[in-house]
Image (cartoon, rainbow, N blue to C red; front, side):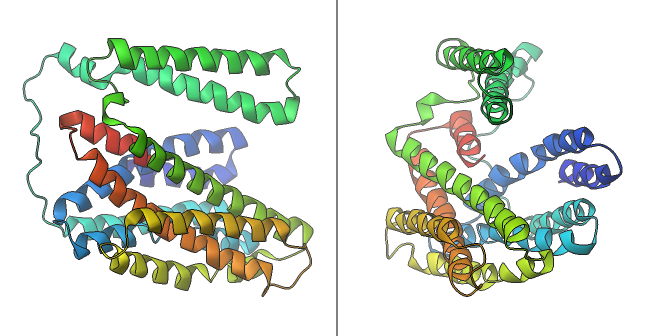
Length: 331
């Protein structure tokens, strides 16, 4: 949380610097959520025994993400929005941290090995796997994004893509054959977990694309002001609260897999409404229903995926493999 707050402050103050510095700060800022999300889920998972209270805790954990467009839209109108948004984020997360501190932390099922040698610690970090995996993702992502701007005819674009594929192959070779404590424990994954992961990844990607483009169309084509757009996003509050509460009540009576199906359908319908919306139509048609429905997708699919994954990953997977599998899937 300290790391997240520090780099949020730096990212906010980057409005007085350059775009490159802002991107640099955002990269380091992202490490904070990458640590807090799986740890928050782990604390909730260990703090409650299976039952309705645990289901409700996972459901409410999924409620805040759809609220993100509200401060972004509102503060973009008259203030330096980078400062406002990035200073609001640590405050929101601080509230989550305080609430989690109130939970009793039971002893971990697997106690860490003490007095390990430096070699053992380095093996546990799986540095070769981490370096090759991150490098592969960076090169692959850069190539596909840069191709839109520069075109595939540029040599550096397809060279980066080829290098990314090779680093990816090296990463999987290290994880399967060389690493003693792989950062991606493939033994912890099966077809069910892979399917849940794919559904969760595509759903969140869909939501991110939806937020970007529905805002761009409203601001740059429809002529909507940022304050108006913030008001247009207010349905996420009742929709998110109702969805989170409904999931907590329904799990146990309705299979989590069916709840996840509802979430995936909501992502699809909300995106179709946003894509089909005429730029100058009134708010109470496409835009309103798109915002309301896609929030249902976020607040139903995520807690359902969390419950399904815990049920699958905690069966037959022990020790650090289980812990790392949880972190990888939810990141």
